[in-house]
Image 1: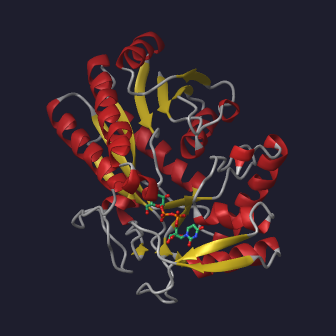
Image 2: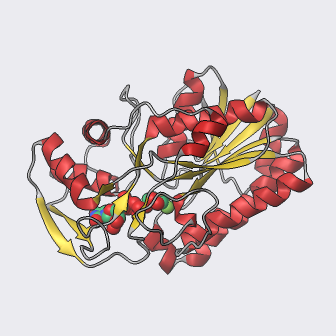
Length: 334
Ligand code: UFG
């Protein structure tokens, strides 16, 4: 039995690859290396460089490698980019996902784990959002992912395919063993930008908006540590292999931190008091997104083990230093 991991050379997919290897699974990574790195796929996982929307390639891999489960991570993920390039997002995240789901059905793959997002909820209040909250994504990114959830729902009713869709809140931190972390070129994530600024890669960083209806006016997010998130995926795989029904679960801790609070932690943990600019709101940002996080515990038996923002920031800092040593300072590495 082999697990096919699309996007397995990227940040979240790469940590899934590690988690699967640690669990003794056979892993085949399919990644076009547009944002991922070949070195992030560590043996015994095998990397095939290609596109998950290439039905002939995916069909052949499923047939020849005995794939019983697909974990689908490959996606474009930058919310502001999705506003300027919506069709690119629908093409990559939705149309190619349709092709992948069809390849799964035609190839007899019965288990599908989908990397969904809290962005499917859209504008929410500071109250935790449950999975049955009405969905109203405000960005093409969120919509492009929600359509995949719908395709999976319909496909699992019609065919012999079961799925777990995991709606990620804000994924952060790095492998506690230091093997991998967020390496994506030009990443826009708050914690990544914060640690890069603390390490002097940027002279300063921006706070996008300070007039939101939150406790200090900056956006509130539920930051989940990457290895905890991967544990939910491993639980999802076991759940599906046990023949259970398709399900959609939030992945977050149920509480959050504001942009100001995160920056304070980065400054304290790094010991660097870097410069912060007061910038306008970033288009497409909801004020607050916090997970209601009971369902993933009840359904998949998941238990968070690393709910600690200081530790998340420390891991991100450690990884950023290692990444710098590995990549040197190529212009696209920051
Ligand atoms: N922010 C800043 N300055 C920065 C970077 C970010 O102020 O330099 C702010 C953002 O405006 C936002 C918050 O920090 O308010 C978090 O921003 P991130 O870019 O880290 O994360 P997002 O909440 O925008 O998005 C993340 C993922 C998406 C996913 C979403 C779901 O990147 O893929 O969570 O909630 F859809």
